[in-house]
Each structure stands twice: as C-alpha cells, then as structure tokens.
Amino acid sequence: MRGITIAIDGPAASGKSTTAAAVAEALGYCHLNSGQLYRAITWASLRGAWNGSENRFRRELERLDLRLDRHTPGYRVLVNGRDIGEGLVSVETSSHVSAVSTRKSVRDKVLAMLRNEGGQGGVVCDGRDIGTVVFPDAELKVFLIASAEERGRRRLRDRGLELTPDGIRREAGLLQARDAADSERILAPLRRAPDAVLLDTTTLSPSEVVDRIVSMARRAEAAFG
Image (cartoon, rainbow, N blue to C red; front, top):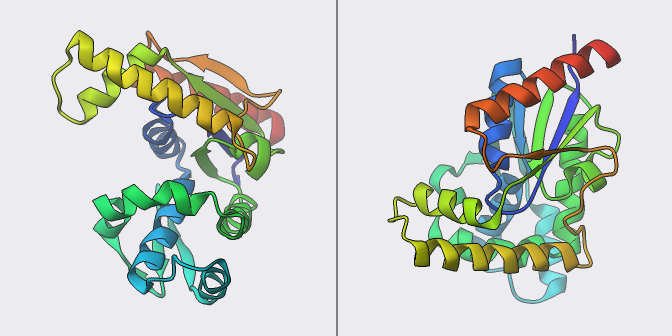
C-alpha cells in the first residue's frame, strides 16, 4: 500500500511537529515538516546575504538547489547538496524565518515541493495551512488545539524553564497574539479545513494524541486504500 496523505494543522505550540513525527513513525510513513523548508531557505538567504531587494531575492531563490531526501520516518533537507544540520535551528535562522516565510516566492517554492512529495502518499505533513492550501484533498486532516495556558505551559517545559503562574500567563498571552497574527494574515492564514477532525489535546498526553490519530489513519487507509 502506498499510503495516504495526512495533514496536521493547528496554532503555535499545539504539538503539531512532535505529533506528526510520532504518527509517521507509528504508521511507517515519512514526516514531511514544512517548517524545515522555510528554515532552509532562510539559512541560505542569510548565508548569501540576499535578503535585501525583492528582485535579487527572487533570482537567488530560483537558483537555489533545495531538495528533500526521503527516508523513513522523515526527510533530510539538502541545500545545494549539503545537509546543513544545526543551521536549520540556529538562533539566526529562527529569528528571521517568520519574515522570509511570508514572501510569496518562498511559499510558492515550498508549496510545489510539498505537493510533489505528498503526491507519492505515505506522508504526514504539519503546519498551519496544510489541510486548506497544501493538501486540500488529503485523505485525513486533523486540526490540533489546546488552551493557551496549556500551550504556554508546554512551551516553558520544552525550554526547561520554571512553570510559574506569571510565566505561564505571559507565554499564553504571546501565543494568543501569535494566533491572531497567523489567522489574520493575507497569505495562507491559519484556518481549520471544513473536513478536518478537531482534536483538543489540552487534557491528553502526547501518546494519547498519537494513538487517536493513528486510529483515524488506519480507518482512512481502509476507506481509501
């Protein structure tokens, strides 16, 4: 069986990437992380100092050899044949990726690459517009949500920071502001697809979330296989 395409969307800190990776591993699929492509382009633009004029940015982006090396349960992102490793998650890349990812030329390039890989089936892709823009025909769409407080708690925990009431409230406020910005942006806003399964993870453990999505996927495989 070639496998189905699974789209997992949701707001910041809802656990999309971690969940998608675990679901892919459980199913023997590949985890297609859209954020890695945006980060790779950001890294390349910073290294080449072509973040200035839009015309130069477009020219350099067209020349960029960006590839996905598929293997189970994930992909390696290659930039001009190179695995940039920690460059994807460096502080510099992280601080610029939001601005780079809003460029239409970047989103068009990433969209084409994601659709090419998704067309092969057997992938779990996560992001904020996967079920609405990237894979509107995905056999399974899931939209993860959790309360702002819980997402704030998770984010602090992931960073190894103390879980104080003030800290959780502050982080929750930042996430709510991010939610509003993601939902209101003109290009590929955060939206739940009409046919996406809404899954509230506020009181669920990571393994419970994965188990539920895997069960949905098995049913979808049976229906569409």
